[in-house]
Each structure stands twice: as C-alpha cells, then as structure tokens.
Image 1: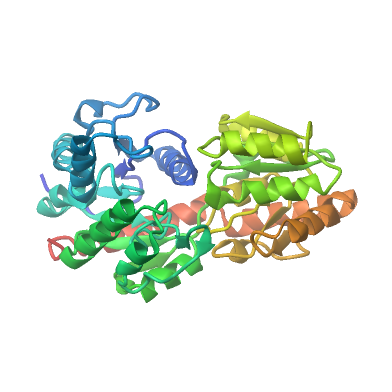
Image 2: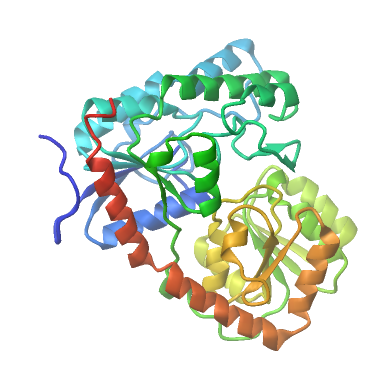
Length: 423
C-alpha cells in the first residue's frame, strides 16, 4: 500500500518522529514531545523511533531500536572506538531497525530531529526506497559544522561553513582532540560528498539565523523552510504574583554559559534557581559555593511542570549562552509564564527578545554586563511584571500551537511532492 500524501480535513495522518534520544533530555527532545502531543490532539497517529536507552518510555517498536551507544566519555578500547566510529558514519543496525518500523507502521511522513552519530543518515535509505516523505527539523548546525555548535574552544567560530571541514582538524575544536576532531570532520565531509541527507525533502529552520547559516553552507538552500517553534500558554499557566530572583533552565554544559551566570549572580544580592543537569554540574556547584554561597540552588532535571513553576516564581530568566542558539524553548516557556528574559546577543536569541520590552540582550561571556541587565529588572518589580506581560502577549500572538501545526502540515505536503525524485 503506498503512503498517503498530505492531510485532508478529518483524515488522520501517520507520523513517525525520529530522534536519537526518546526522553526529555534537552530542547530538541522537548520540542519533539510537544509537537507529537499537538499532532495527536489533532487526531493524527504518532509513533517514535530512536536509540535504545534506559530512560526511554515504552514504545511498541522498541525491539527494532539500535542498541544504546555512549559517545561521551569515549570507549576506552581500540575495538570500542572503531565500532563507535563505524556506527557514527553509517549505522547498519539503525537502518535495519528503521526498515522494520516503517514496514510495520507505514507512516505517511517521517519527521526527523537529531539523528546524528547514534543513528546516522543510514536511516534515510529505507524511506527513499519506499517513497516515504521525510522532513527534518534542524536543532543545531551539524550539517554545516563538524562539532555542530559553531564553536572553537568555547569561542563562536564559522570557519567550517561552506565545506571547509579541515578547519575542525587544524583547530582541534572537538574536545581539543586531533582524533575526535578528525573523525567529526571526516563524518561530515563523507555525508556531504555522498549526499547522505538527500532523501530529506524539507529542512525546518526554527530561526532565521540558522536558516541563513544553512543556506550559506550550501545545505540544500531550496529545501530550507523557516518555521518558529510554538508554546501552549494554556498548558503553562499565567503568572499571578510578584516573583523574585533569577532562574535558568537547560543543559549544564559549557556552551550554555551557566558559569558566566553564576559569576553575575555573585555580584548581585539575589538568588538563582537552576533546573537541569549535565557534565558541568560538579564544576558549577563548586563555582557557586565560591562566588555566591548559599544563593544558588540546583534542582536537577525536573518535569516540565516544575520548570514552569520555577519560572513563575522568578522575576527574570537568564539564557547566558556562548554559542549561536537556534530557538531555545526555554525562552518561549519563560515568556509564556510572563517572565522577561535576559540572554546573550547571539544567533536566534536576538530574534526572540526585544530589549527593554520583554527582556534584554547582553554580550556573551560578560558577567558584568549580565549582572547589570539582571539588576535593572530585579530592582524594578513593577517594570518586570509589565515586561513579563508583554512577553506573554508576544508568544500568544507569534508562537501559537495551531499556527505552527498548520505551517508544519504545509511543509509535510511539500516534502510529499518530492518523493521518488530523492532516491
């Protein structure tokens, strides 16, 4: 039976979402879960495919998932490293598993998210062979940058954009390791040269900044479509009382700049709540005890409802990233909770925040500037409430769920017109 094309009123569409992790690990997973819930509410049939992982929820197709593979820290043995490298380039187990799932589920469209490394573009071959439309949301810069963050030793870098992937090797920008940087550069060079992502009919870009970088890099410019994320304000709840302090929600990794935020809070008389976990947790805890003893609380990875509660109890949220963020959901969630945001003036963050209206923008890695911007909001509670109200009004008008769903459906239909020509 050939796959159906497009969406007709009242007709359910079978959608397979694909991501290497199938638990709420970060922004990509949060978006995938939320858009899947939105589609199910619209009457569509939704399933998932990803890597086997102990934190995954139940799935009817889990027996077909490729085995769990941990890349950080890297395998110690040479055999383990060789196997990991081979799977990163082209995973036969992921391809086989995808073939089994699409045969059983027969999706009308496959929506890909972060599939690099643990799954690899091998999963696209079963889709092309069966003329199944594929759409991919780009959550980072992996198709233009071997290390996906456009960072070189923690500093924004665009040296590889345009296919100059040897720059990653020369700069050793993957953990300052020649081996790791060489593998990352080879992987992207091979996939680019071989057209491994050719079966993807449309690439969804949540920010204009990311769309521009992908176009500049020559990543299928004619297939790029700008579609911002969404936020369901009714599910978040309105902020009803004056809050206090600062909140950060996200992965505790170097590119997020949480160390800069702790330095900034150390200059102020306020408290900081941190929701999330990651490789920097221990270091950040030590830094907090040194610079702001007793004023920083680490909540760990908490459910979405608890994140929203933390936002509602704060005066301001901070996103102090030192990389070109795409369109982080944490900004939209804070806005939906009627909380202004102070963020780094980088990438897609600059598109979300209107300084003085719903937050502020500051240079990255500048704790003094960050502290000053936070203090301007913290010291004016009435102004902070007004800014929060403007922030909530913005997301209600510009990031409405149904508006996003309609745009995504249109992109699915565009991709469906391209099947057969993308093998």
